[in-house]
Length: 447
Ligand code: PLP
Image 1 (cartoon, rainbow, N blue to C red):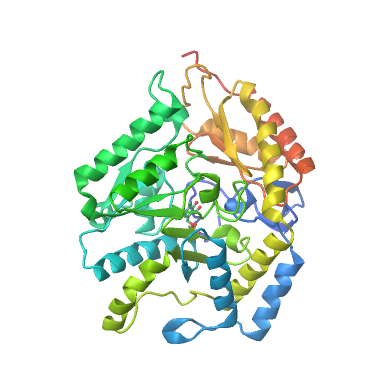
Image 2 (image 1 turned 180 degrees about the vertical axis):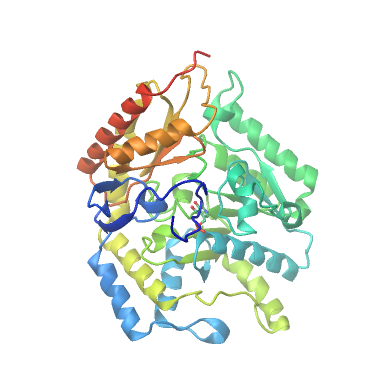
């Protein structure tokens, strides 16, 4: 083994796949074997690999100015242009943009902005944040506390109480509904639970509610119709801000520009963007807030002398130039619209797996989807560990397809937005073979 401490990896695992190069939606290992990147890396390489226009934009910016920062009034044109472009695109009123390097640090920034904002309003007690069970919002100490997946919390002693993190239901009907409960009843029950939590804790102590419009790492959950409408009504009733974590769902992933549009989330107060913002050609993220929140903090920062938060690489000029080029390509080449059509095709094709003996639920929207593998289709009994999902991932890999098992045994698919229908067919064929071979080695439960 090399000296690398691998992220999100079992330390006992061996180095089993060395990826060497990429082209279009394919990557190649060190022996030259081709894989269709069915996960767009980690839900991020929307425009695929080796895009010469993006590489040229990066080179140009590197030559012109490889680094300049944004502290204390210094700035640069690429950063200004990118912030203005994002502000035009997002459904956030009079948006203001703070740049970071990852989804996690952007969520940390939001936590600090929330505190700063409510301190500026003279409401320091309004600082708790409601997150949902099974949420994923990153892994830094603060953002990791908003994440609810067991592996990301166990043994890390995250400062959940100190940060005032509260958890409410995950909107997954298939797993969360009571016996005989309709989707509408499920939505009513879990949103009532949300309201009761708010009343119990005291709305004056709660700053924001954070949600991935459609989740990724928790198994690609699309909440039932009416869920977000009810959530928004409750939050407005108690003056709690809506914080949309669009790290995965931003930029055309779910069939629209943003997950908020797809899920009818109107004008969130805060939004987190990363990943597809640069098609992962550079690590860059954005914490976006409503203009009114920014205005309220101006006086306070002036009193302190500085808004004392910023990363060395906040608004890195190369990252900004790359993201600008990526956004230009999205618009010029109608990427979101085309991906919406391909996404419809993907979802229709995937439905064919509903009848597969291993598949409990097929779900998704646009170019993001998951198949939940279960031990018993009728009772929805889950497998006792994640080994079946892991085997299916390896079987896909064997067939030249990269997918990921998330939240146990859900196989996630999130191909680059430039994937064609013919390439979707290729995914289906490889995935189908992998499911069949996994089934051969799997004992289904009779209960
Ligand atoms: N938020 C969401 C919804 C994510 O899916 C992720 C990563 O997958 C993050 C935040 C964290 O982003 P990063 O890994 O860039 O820190």
